[in-house]
Image 1 (cartoon, rainbow, N blue to C red):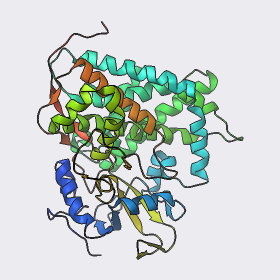
Image 2: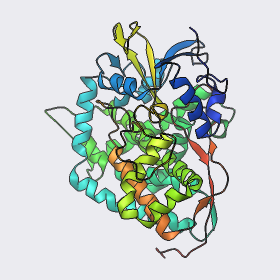
Image 3: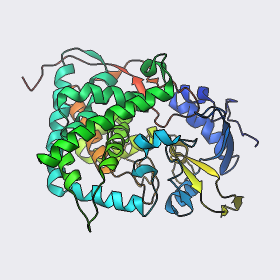
Image 4: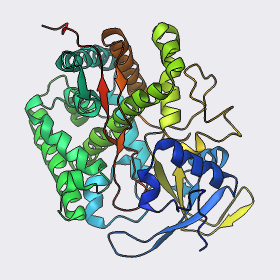
Length: 425
């Protein structure tokens, strides 16, 4: 398979491609996008030591078409990994994000039934309070790592509170989620075996959730765990072995958009002071479009995989059954065929048909509404309480051990601001 290369001379499958600033990567994708709708690639590293060929999908039209046709382009053969995962990994990471109908539809309906309007309304108050508490903890310091102070703990605390996980277990959940999202980065993995470390993190989260679920079956409360273990739709319930992988999905995929978008958003606003001023001067009028523009521009989720279930033709090209397609959301979100001046960050961009929460179809992000709400609350509170907060230097990205990371994670981002007094004390 001939592998196209970008303007920098780096292939998409090269880890070095992903260790550079966001706009450099997107500039390379702009070059690739004009070479063709599908970029043939291969990745040499996987857990089985084999080379894996795939096609990178980097245009908006083809990405959305593939997303809309789950019967032809399935998720169940490996949606979150370019390589096929070993069977032992599926025990922890085989949630409904990596399923196809009818199993996917059944789980999604049961899970969706637990997200009642009353629970979501209560959650909004919780999101506001958690964000305020975290800013209280940082506001007197004048300089912090935004990732450690706010971006990482904020969405994960929301999820833990939602699930009823005690704060005493928060660090356990944070450490495990850092490993699962860490793409093999040595800061989180050290010199441990990557695969064994990944499985260990999954086992930790599954064990924590199973223990909590057992208690909630006997002693129901008002949290989401209770709702999930007791939820029933048309006689269907989540099986005990399905709850743990769902929690991993929630604790990992459920927080990564907010976590990365908060850090990336702060960095992007630092590079675009005119857009920051527009937003900060009119938060009521601009927050909704600004949040979606951050998700478009930063595209925290790097990719998902789909696999052809039959021979198929798309955009005039023919592909065999079993062909792997890697949907690169950030590249599609800067497709000039869809977005006017796609490289320009515009907090009032409208319309904005981005695919930062996934393409259309059954796998569109279940938590998109919550992620938007969290991002809006985070920036409104930061603007109001620390009005001169600004990044110092460039964000430090995850160093993927091989190929593209699932999430374009930011490990560290230093910010400075004028110290203020906490409001909660």
